[in-house]
Image (cartoon, rainbow, N blue to C red; front, side, top):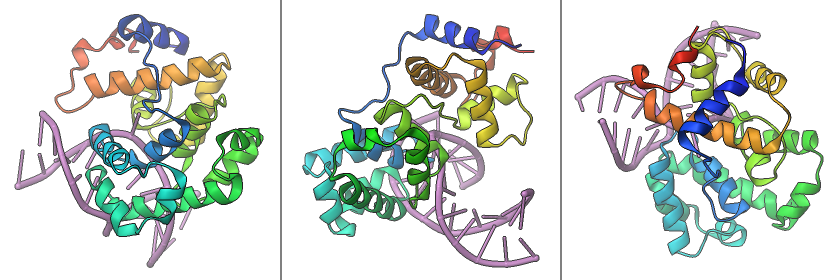
Length: 212
DNA sequence: GACCAGGCACATC
DNA sequence: GATGTGCATGGT
């Protein structure tokens, strides 16, 4: 099938703009990106809600809190010990490197920022690109398991494609526009959740007509 | 009671 | 470089 822009158009027409990322601030977005690693969003919502209730969803509080306290609050998001370390490492870096100012983070050129993020423990390619796109507004396409499934199922890529291959494919096929990258990734996750999860409703999928 | 979820690091060969 | 495993809760 060739035209990935057509995929986006179908999803947009069917579901409307997704208005991602679901967060009240860039900092909340970045914490959410770590919390959602291999985890259902419902658990992340509870974790975020717990952090807000305790008034600790800010760099200073998260950096200084007892790890056990953070772990208890983010428990519903799973992997709470790992994620506590990742969140505190990220938050301390954010404070030391940028004094907790998102605008300073935005001033770093895209490639340098991506390398810095990837060098942090617990930040891999998807989390890095999510932060770059949704918190810093860089035009970088986010690849996740849903994107892989779609690209593979629709014959764009083979079974063994790497993250960077898929990212390059998406970016070659699409106009380099941040709002498009933002909403297209959101649409892919949305349609994937609804039609590709357990008891997959493949027959009703809006993208079915585009199958090879 | 399996199986999976908007990954990532690390160990081993 | 490729492959395997631990991390953990909560919903189907």
